[in-house]
Amino acid sequence: MPHHTPLIATICAGIVLAFVLGSIASRIRLSPLVGYLLAGVVVGPFTPGYVADQELIPQLAEIGVILLMFGVGLHFSLDDLLSVKHIAIPGALVQIAVATAMGAVMAWLLDWGWGAGIVFGLALSVASTVVLLRALEERRLVETPRGKIAVGWLIVEDLAMVLALVLLPVFAHDAGESGDAAGLGLTIALTLGKVAAFVALMLLVGRRVIPRALELAARSGSKELFTLSVLSIALGVAFGSAMLFGVSFALGAFFAGMVLNESELSHDAAADSLPLRDAFAVLFFVSVGMLFDPSILVREPLQVLAVCLIIVLGKSIAAFAIVRLFGHPTPVAATIAASLAQIGEFSFILAAMGLDLELIPKAAQDLILAGAILSILINPLLFVLLDRSERKTAEARPRPMAPLTWKNHIILVGFGRVGSLIADGLMPHKLDIVVIETQDGPADNARERGLPVIYGNAVAPDLLASAGVERAATLLVAMPNVLEAAHIIKLTRERNPNLYIVARAHSVTDEAYLKKNGASETVMGEREIARCMAELASVPLPPAPLPLHVLPVGS
Image 1 (cartoon, one colour):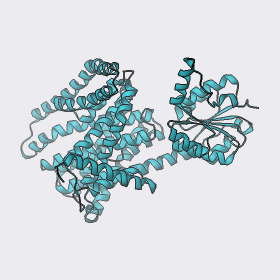
Image 2 (cartoon, helix red, strand yellow; image 1 turned 180 degrees about the vertical axis):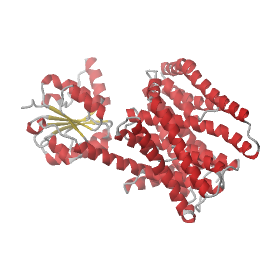
Image 3 (tube, one colour; image 1 turned 90 degrees about the vertical axis):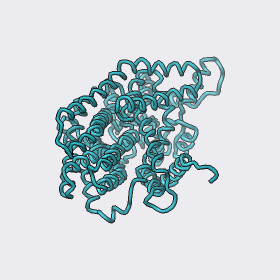
Image 4 (cartoon, one colour; image 1 turned 135 degrees about the vertical axis):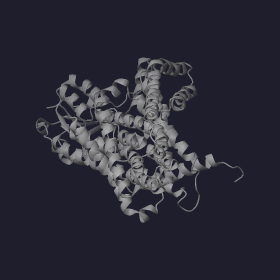
């Protein structure tokens, strides 16, 4: 190699291998996360061949965590955070205490001592930011009530771990000497004071300065400057908050996004940061894989199993029970439990510091890393089981009987922002419309408009029968997930070959895929906006095939 380029080599090896192995995992119907983790194992120090830089790749992964939390903050307001404080604060603290106690008991059984047990238990108690948010975003749950609880819970865990990292050196010092209660109290007060000062600065000053900076960049008319301003805000606030106030990068980035949420340009900022966020988030999983020594599965299988049970079962059961005790329904409790059934970046930091301070043995760090990678592998399976359980529950709910007698009616799949607007346009024409929806909020919204609602996933055969798909004239698929929409279209086309199907698309590729699976027409947002603007400018264009003029009136 003509030049020494560890940074380029590390990024290339991580991204290329993650793509290859992630694609293979996806082809055999596993989560791509499995491929990303295996890519890390391949370039890690415990397997033969090329070894990526073990100092660079965790730092690159941290950028992914920063951008991820910044993106979450962009969709989260202060009111959202305060609305879940009554469950997030006590819930997270109790769950941390329960998981720490379980870890401490295991450490005591292994003769590590109670000091090591506390550090070991804390490392098993805190969930990974990346894994939790990826799971919520894939299911469009971040902005739902259960998603807000999970994110609020995560923020409380983050703050608790910041305090723990500050106190670990004090704890290590006091382990060898007589404790100084006054000194310990002063350290805790100083840490809490720094966090409070950071939050106050962001709410009092940041709410004015950060949105203003983004608006000034937008006025320049330069796309590059706007993108740079977004990245500068995310990375600059994260780094500055860590250096000045001692809070984590992730927490600083979250608050930067949250105060920027008040700007009208927040959606543009989220879109601009998305590609980099996804790329660096992948490097996070690669960095986790690099830390994993597969030989521990052979050396200490029972201990690895015990750690996994604490993370996947112990934490989940505790979180589920806490959420149910606060009066939230089972689906919400199950989502929170599944979200927290893994560990990640803070666990690695705690383990490394504990080892440096001689608070835990090397075996403890190995078990923490093994528990992290195995729990991250298991976590997507928990959500698959959760999705199936919710689908079965939805299918068991009573269906409205009216649509069974309709003919030539309209079936509207999805009642989010687009679906509700479609209904508003159709209802004045006195058409028979039945809605299929999977989430409580949109379903209630449809019922308030007087529309019959079938609650559940449209891929269920009995649900389509309840909607009268064989006798319907039109199917409108307003859901944003193209893969799921194509599956629904294919099923309905098989049951009613003459059905007129209109689907929502985001790109030309989406349009081709939806039509290949049976869509009669597709509507792409950008094209319709351009057509409408051209018509308003009195520029003649050929008419687009719109569904409204062919929709039949219900019998």
